[in-house]
Length: 104
Image 1 (cartoon, rainbow, N blue to C red):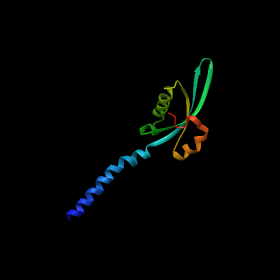
Image 2: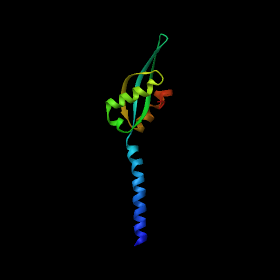
Image 3: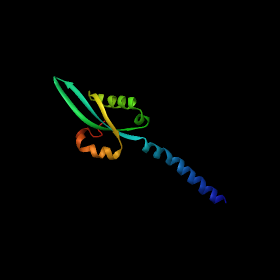
Image 4: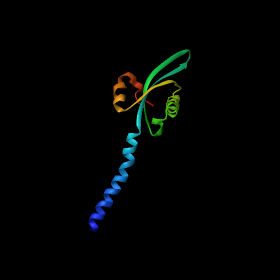
């Protein structure tokens, strides 16, 4: 009986430890966006794909803010977030995003 209790306790601990990993994997999303950068009289544009995680995935305003903040580190200005999708959608857009695929 004691051994069964130990096995059940171990199984419970493993399950509890695995839950955050499962939950966080479900809270992952990807977005594609368009951005601009003006400098020295030249206007540059880029299309990118970004990976996000957590509550930002279900909050459009927060999502837009997070994208804008990340790309601003290289002086890019967000024009618009185009769409939100999963890993399969990201894989489909990888070639189009080129060097801006998961850069930020």
